Every structure is written in C-alpha cells, then in structure tokens.
Amino acid sequence: MPDARRPRLSPEERRAQLVATGVNLLAEHSLDELTMDVLARHAGVSRPLLFHYFDTRQGMHLAVVTTARDSLLRASEPHPELPPRERIRDTLLRIAEFVRDHKGTFHSLVRGVASGDPAVRRVVDESRETNAERLVEAFTELGTPDTSALRVALRAWVAFTEETLVSLVIEREVAPAEVVRFLEGTLDGVVAAAGELAI
Amino acid sequence: MPDARRPRLSPEERRAQLVATGVNLLAEHSLDELTMDVLARHAGVSRPLLFHYFDTRQGMHLAVVTTARDSLLRASEPHPELPPRERIRDTLLRIAEFVRDHKGTFHSLVRGVASGDPAVRRVVDESRETNAERLVEAFTELGTPDTSALRVALRAWVAFTEETLVSLVIEREVAPAEVVRFLEGTLDGVVAAAGELAI
Image 1 (cartoon, helix red, strand yellow):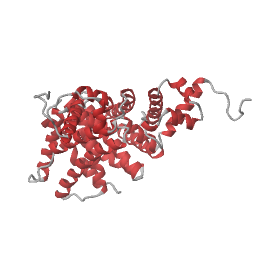
Image 2 (cartoon, one colour; image 1 turned 180 degrees about the vertical axis):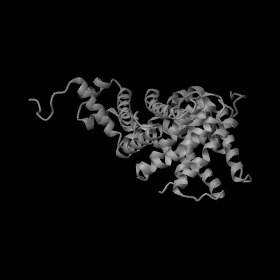
Image 3 (cartoon, chains in turn red, yellow; image 1 turned 135 degrees about the horizontal axis):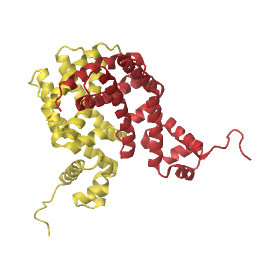
Image 4 (cartoon, chains in turn green, brown; image 1 turned 30 degrees about the vertical axis):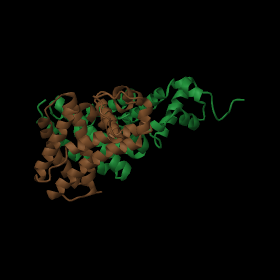
C-alpha cells in the first residue's frame, strides 16, 4: 500500500530530493564525511538506490556541491538596476547573509576548493570565478581598465572575502552589514594596487 | 652483497628519505594522488616497508605535508634585525622565491588547506597562522593596536597572498619582486580597514 505521506516522485524529483538532503548534510559534515552510507541513512533510502542515481560517491559529491554552489550564486545574483558601488555592496551583503543562514554549507564549499577531486574543485572554483567576474564588471563600469592584473587581484580578493566570512560571520557571528563595511574598505586598495601591476 | 651506492641508513634517515621523496612528488601530484603505491614505486621500496614507517596513508600524508610546510616556513623565517617594513618585504620576497622554486609543493600545500583530512588541514592551517602572526608582530611594532580585527584581517590577507602567488608566480611566472610590490600595495589598506572593524 503506498504511503500517503510520501507521494510518488518522478525520478528527477527523487534525485533532486536526495541532492537536497546531501546539501543539508553539508551543514554538519565535511564533503569527505558525506559517504553514500551517510546519505542513504539520512535520506531513508538504500545504498543501491543511491548508486542508481549517482553511479559513484564522486558523482554524488559533484551533484551536491553544484547545487550548494548554485544556491549561493543565485542568492547573491547582482541587481543590474543598481549603480556599480551599490550593486557591489548589495551583492556582498546577500553573500554574507547567505553565509550567516547556511554556515555549514558555505564552510564545506570553501573547504571544497581544496578537495582532492578535480571535478569538485572545478565546481567550487567556478563560483570564485563568477564572483570575481561580477566585480570586474562593476569596476569596469566605474572606469577601471579590464586587465589581467585586475582579474587576478579580484579573484584573490574573493579568497580574502571567503576567509573573512568564515572568521567573522561563521566563527564570531559578526553582523553581515559590519563585515561588508570591512570588506568594502579593503577593495579599492586592492584594485588600485592592481593598476600598478605590470603583467 | 650490500650495494656500495646505497649506504646503510638508520631508521630515522630512511624515514626522512622517504618523506623527502614524498615532498618531491608533490611537485607533480596532488596529495590525493600520492598513495602508498605511488610513493613505494618512486622510492624503490616495498609497500610493507612504507606501512612499517607510516602506519597509514594518512600518516604518510601528514609527514610529507608537515615537512613541506616546515621548509616553506624555514625559507621565509623573518630576519629580526630588519625594521618592520623591510622585514615584511624581505619575508614576502623569500616566500615568493620559494613558490617560484617549488611550484608544485606550494600548490599542494595551498590545496591541502581544504584536504578532507582534519589533521592534514591543521598542519597547513598552522602555516597560515604563523604567517599571519609574523605580520601581526611587524604591525604592532609599527604601532598598530593588536586586536582580533587585525588578526582576522591579516589571516585573510595571507589567503589573498596564497591565491595571488598561485596566479602570478605559478601560472603566469611573474617575477617575485613584482608580485611582492603588488602585495605590499594592498597590505596597508587591509590593516586600515581592520582598524575600523568593531569586533
């Protein structure tokens, strides 16, 4: 007899549900701890079913990390109608609020950059790239020349930001607005230094 | 008959030699690729011998990463006789030169921060801490108050530095002195912003 509380899901919906369970587990587990066993237990499904949906643990990690990354990127999508400075501030604030509200997920994402698995690393790296690219757009609108020096500097600044968010928002529970004020205060100096970098 | 080219080593010497082989392999392999099999093959020893010396792959990784980290920290030991500004520049230059001369090792160390293994991560984290601590010392000598804001900011700036070194010294082969000029140009802005951070 089908369980009335558990409506029949399409394979896509069931897979999405398993991925969502995996993303939630990142709040308490590192990627390395997120094994097929752990996910099967929390999702209340069998290991063979997981292997049916993801083939390998690596495939499952890739799906989970991609979903976590996409929700961060979506939550911090720049508002194109804002002028560049306000857009940067608004985007940073939404990132900091996402980190406050999804501490474990963000921590796993940042740590995932150094995952041994190149495919997982690439997924996380892409979010750094996207965040750096958003900043490049805002600064070129402000008249800063679009150079590789600017790109390198902004990408490194994204790493600076990640570390700051972990230290201030996750470990010290500093208010997002205060953290954004600090981050903004460091950004122009980095962009100015990139202007002097001959590469 | 003993091989004349291979003098008998003490267990400590033999272990150190195996660790050194592992560190050299980091130039071409990620930590995840550095298995007992790979190390046994390159060191010309049996797997059981490796297990005798390191117990587990994790134990071997820990020994290799600790040795790699210590050689970076030793190579960039601050010269206490220099005044703070020059000491910072000199230390940064020696780090950048180490990265130029040991590209793969540095890359593995930076990536090792996000290793799934907490013990390995701690070893690499400690080198960030040490580098941040060296900067805190120099800035407090310059009269900057020693606050948690300063410490958080300088730790995040070390992450900024690592990313910059990978992008500029490893990927683009920019000269260490040029990279150091850029890094120095970003440092005071970060320290000033930390002065405004109320935590």
